[in-house]
Length: 310
Image (cartoon, rainbow, N blue to C red; front, side):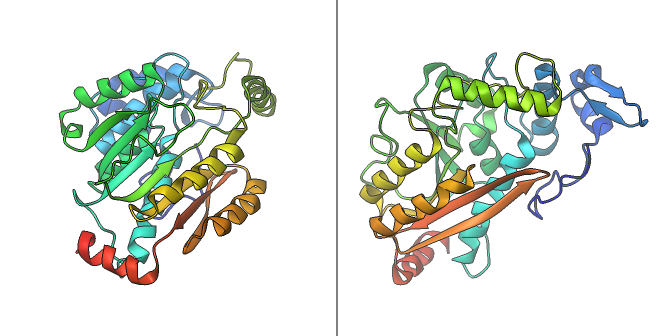
């Protein structure tokens, strides 16, 4: 409940949650609010129902999302950290647009693995009015994301979902010959297997002294683990990005494990990129980083800016 140090300056969630304000907007949240031993109102963040209720209240209060549900056991995203990724990608665009963030329908963003929660398209379309295509392979996640869109009319014109039908493909089958994207985003699976993911959960439970069988954020295959883990997934992404080098300005992804950066940077050099960036991100004690790369030369970047952003 302390201030969330390290968040992006434009992030709306810099300070501790105003639980009274959130409970007024979303009364269901009030049943999970209690006063702790220090006399502060707080939530039991090990209770999945409390965390989901908090997310509903945040999305309604700050982003005007009237309906948001996720299936049992699926990933429940921490909204402040997810909003940070959106803000830092906006900065990447601004750096190439004379310091001004491009906003509105002209900006097209591809979210790889939109998930059941659809969080990045929701936040990006709400904050900067960008248009999104969300790529998703898992059937339950795809259907749930569709349901969120259908029950929030203002998302209908901003977010389109595409089914990825080939399990070992990332961009292929999603990016069409006449598509152009100003950004791609991705929060890749971290672990290499379900067993490794469970060990990670157990470590967190021990560190946080939780007695619950699961952490509050949940997660399924494809959300938390894939063959080869984060490093292999991003290696595949870099390899495949070469096929669409003139159709995307910034390819981006979160990178959870710092030791993965050097081998990924080596792959980027071999792929012949024009430029790459690593942006450090933090939310309290949690550290992450944003890896971005582009194949566009400075001259091509300027042509893109004039044609799409002005």
